[in-house]
Image (cartoon, rainbow, N blue to C red):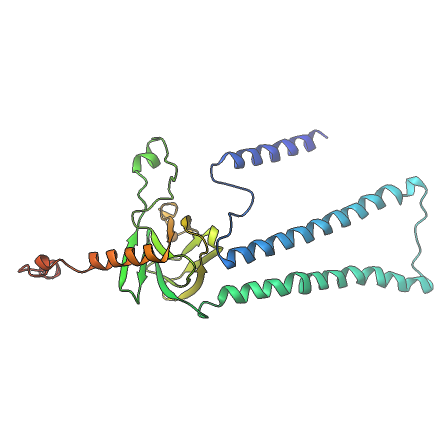
Length: 285
Ligand SMILES: [Cu+2]
């Protein structure tokens, strides 16, 4: 009894401390893409079915322990002779039930979700390439000719020397990824060094960025806003310092942002006319 009490207390404390972490919640974040919604539905479906099975099985078990015990004078059933056939019924019916639940109730929607997740090409509106590096993300818009890196900007003293932590501690970057709302974005991901993983919980996407491979995923974000995520594959010393921030904006705002990025990428006429270009200097050294 004492050990049971201790067990209960430790579980309570563990849950209590987990809840005190800001930003951590028990449920999924609000889904903003078709994939995230499907994933959440799948999760809820499985959760409901396994809870029903849990209470059914344990209810039956506890009922039998109480009412069918020898101490209460219960006579054990004999499964020999012609009654033996019934035994097979009891052995096979849970198997059949689990088969139907696994393949029918879970399997079909899960299959649909996986196929949908992998379908990056149908009706894709634009392509964004995501490259993981130790320890930042690089974003390229190949068709638009825009590319930039995205690094953590949380001040070092918040991390190292106990300065008060900001609202988006470790989840803030210099150049967030900008996407238009309601467009299907086909992401292609890879890495420059080790395996990273691009993850935005509200999008329901997480895909490993593997050096030497191009892997794909997609997102069609239905709501404007700022979404945050993290690298979710342990990738070295600063794995915890390469967050993902995505600004989802309207079509017009996206067009404006794209134009401003393109302008920044074109060197100013004065710089282009300079006698020695920086690249030449670098080569000469
Ligand atoms: Cu990483």
